[in-house]
Image 1: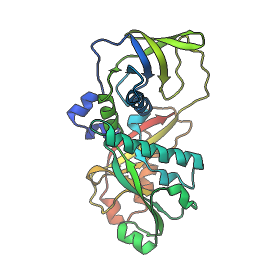
Image 2: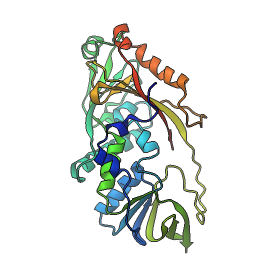
Image 3: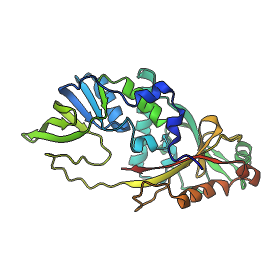
Image 4: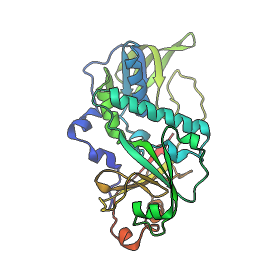
Length: 317
């Protein structure tokens, strides 16, 4: 039976796992910037505030770092995969995100574990404006070239190859971002806020009160706290992912719509969009659909040699 948790934790060292649950001997009672939420957005925002010299930056997380959607994500930074599918502004945002991740990886102590990646979009696919692929070079491959690159594909067809993409282990990135912050406390829950003159001046937590100059809520969905009258339409969408055991396939990069090759030759498949499913359980029928989507497009010997090692779900804000 495949394990029902994300593979990312299993890839960490003992030191990296410890970095996901930092503890402060005493929680600061004042923060120039308080970040509530230890997912990727909270960690990256805290890192940028610290680098900008905005004073004492404190980050709080009620569980461990990247405990929610961040730690269950696929870890892909692939703007090319969204070109022609999502609005141009969204693709532009992904390009900027990838640029900032590269900057963090080059300048943050220890980096964030960014790994370069090629993206291959198999036909049929939507038409793509070459300008949306900037600054990466795109190369159209015919079926023969695809077969040379992916001989296990049952029915080779043309596609678009784009370099300059990336991926990461989201838990490793969270561990190293957290390790470089000056004040990170896990196991601390925000309970309420004190608002004066239309602004938050303090946050009540399970470890005491913190006076704040500014507060950033990076909680996935909108925060529901005593004293905070905030009504923002929001919801969550469930997704399933799976990873195979190490596979001896001459595969590289992210092949849409099939899989991404990660460490040890493993293939990552997903995630799905399971609208209306609010159960935290892995559903075998969804995993079976993802699995069929991969194996049905491979040659019989290649498909027969694959086994699932991990399967999990997470909820996207």
